Length: 250
Ligand code: 13P
Image (cartoon, rainbow, N blue to C red):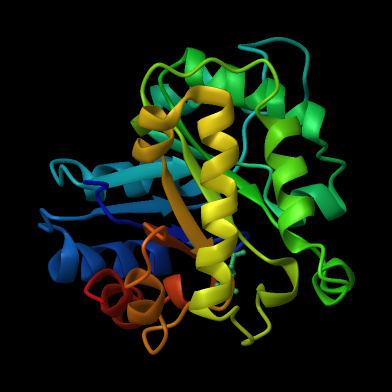
């Protein structure tokens, strides 16, 4: 009942020419998918270019990698939800662990960003995940549940399709060491329980939960076979049309 979502997080990569080639190749390979959704989240400077290339591909969503919670004002270097809408975004990543670790993102700022995104009709992809130390101490589920509760503080949700959660263990990001599908699915089940406590069972069942962290063509099928994993948030392997289209066609 949940439509699979395969999302590309390009992070701080790609120049215009390469992006152009990549998205054209991707659209040729997977642009007309119907039974799943694809999201492409380029850096801000490429949003307008990519929007032109994905226009008309109904199941392909343009997304940004961050936003500010205010609509406009004296916030040098920031980009707002209305600006992202203006350039054609339908989704936005919030609270990626790289932003939490390096750019002062907190659960409080995530909560404000979530509210702003939703107010403007952008679907947030909210990221949560534990560190290697927390993972090795067996604290994964406690940590991500607490993160999710804090980030969703004060949020109301009338439709689970308006929210996406990405579980990305920090130790699996860019390391080539993905979580096992079984572990990731158990964490997802715990996250969905939190969603049910907050929003009720029906809405919790609609929210798509993505796994992220060293997703590759070789391991995507294992994740997608799990009961509570509804897609993937892909970094490195989303930068090549061949590998990302194989992931989309898992
Ligand atoms: P990798 O797929 O490169 O491990 O990155 C995952 C990620 O951080 C996606 O947001």
